[in-house]
Each structure stands twice: as C-alpha cells, then as structure tokens.
Image 1 (cartoon, one colour):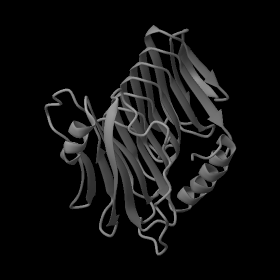
Image 2 (cartoon, helix red, strand yellow; image 1 turned 45 degrees about the vertical axis):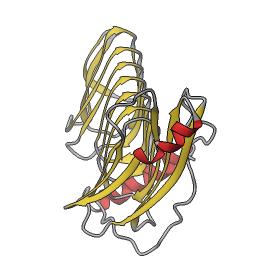
Image 3 (tube, helix red, strand yellow; image 1 turned 180 degrees about the vertical axis):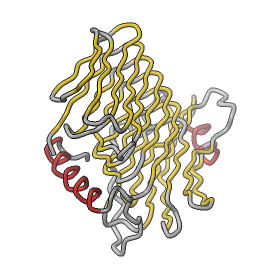
Image 4 (cartoon, helix red, strand yellow; image 1 turned 45 degrees about the horizontal axis):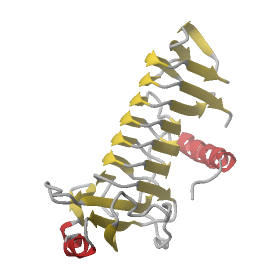
Length: 287
C-alpha cells in the first residue's frame, strides 16, 4: 500500500538530491533486478464490486521489457487504476481483474470474454488499454489495473470512471479522469491532472521551469510542494470553496477568499490550480 506521509517526505527528499546531481536529467528506466509483481494493491473488497447481482471475473497478467521505451500509456474505462514506480524494476508488470455484471450468471459468464486487456508496444510507448463492447445491452464491464513500472518512465492515464493512483515516479505524470479521485504522490517531475467529478491530491517536486496543472470541476485540490519551489502560482475557485496556503513564502501576492496569485522563489515554473466547487489547499514541506 502507499507509504505514509513521513516516508514519502524522506523518499522524495532522497530523489530530489539525486535529481539535482544530474541536473534534472531523468534516470534510465533499465535496471538489472527483477521484482515480484504478484501483490495486489487495490482494495479486494471492491474488486468487481458494481451494482449487479450476478458477476463473472478473471485475472490476467502481462509483462513488457522496458528496453527502448520511455512512456507507459494507460487507457482505462471503468475501474480503479493503481500505478507504482520501483527503483529495482526492469519491466512493466500488469495485473488486471476483469469483471462483467449481468442479470443472470449464465449471461455474465458468457460475455466475460468480451472484456479484454490489450498490451502493445508502439515506438517508445507501452500502451495498456481496456477493450470492451460499445453497446452494454444491460451489462456492466469493469477492469481493475495494478501496474508496477520502473520509476523513471513517464506515465499517462485516461479513465472514465474510477479512482486513479500513481506513486513513486521520477518523471512526468499526466492523468485525465471523468469520475473518481486522482492521487499522485511522491513524484519528481511535472504533473498534469484533469477531472470532472472527484478530488485531486498531489505531492511532487517540479522540474526546473516545469509545469504543474491541476483542474477539477466538482472536488477539492490538495497540493504539497517543497518550500524551495520556484514558480508562479495561480489558484482559483470559480463558484463554491476557498483557497488556503500553508508554509510557503510568496512575493507579489494577490489574494481573495477564492483566489490566490504569487511568486515562489524566482518564479521559474508554472503552477495552476482550478476548481468550480471545492476547496484548494497548498502546503509547503521541507526537504
């Protein structure tokens, strides 16, 4: 499961020093040690847990060597997505729980094979995607992804319905979701997260001159960044909610209850935080 906040701070501090030593050039994803990808990180009490009395499910696994690849792209539809970066991984390891719900057990069993996980390689990108019928005909389809990757790979995730969690990545992270919370923690790189219904929680060390963009329509935003971050920060609540800033020193600030603008350090990067309905919290932590 995800590390505690104190452990995250210790680990992110270690990674930050490493990044400074290499002038923010990302480490190579290749490693020489294999890791066991069999542990399931998602809540097993809700696997396949949607509103159907009859369900059929199966678990599938796949692995891809990362040689020549720099990015993992995940195109999910319904279900939870969990991605964890590891320093000792030399391949992408995917475990997926596929579930079909229907009005009868026979129908659920019959159409389980209509739901698939497809893994392909296209140039430098490893693509993991859900394949399901376009017409549901009264059935429900759900895939829970548990994915372990080398920590130096870039991550892109798209999802329609379900929580997305990304941890321990030394590269950029981009997540787009319709419904379901987004949690992106212990990142050393730029982060972009866009959401309609749900909250966003992010803890990252930005790249120099980097970009951090978090946007949701209905939900709160919580961002934690080092106190030594250098960026222009803009936070705005358009309808209902407030903006709160903690343990960060700004210059040239303009603030109201629903908005805040200011400069951190030299203002090298860009931080944009937006929500229609929900509070925005920004915290600074010491490295």
